[in-house]
Image 1: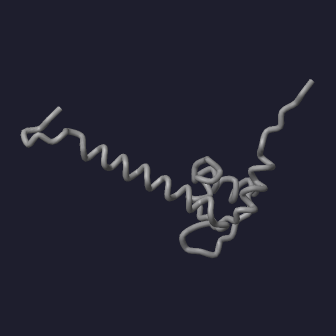
Image 2: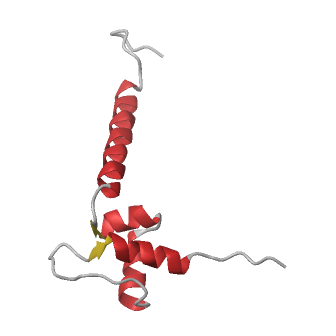
Image 3: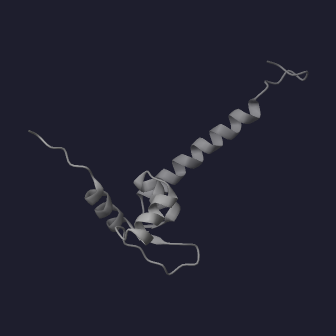
Length: 94
């Protein structure tokens, strides 16, 4: 649809979607290229929610973390990899 000034309606929404897409790509590149993660980056790396990451770190103690920042918990990539390896479901052949 066109407005009176002959511009496309919804153009702003499309631009914001493009920006979100590129922001997500930047986050992926950053997450895959460093070894220290904050809670949000760890959740993105493990493909779960921030609440799940906090639960496994603080309640179930399955996930090792460092708590020396004011912003929240800090995780090492090696710890996240070992957590993912241990929590992986194994298939059984009969």
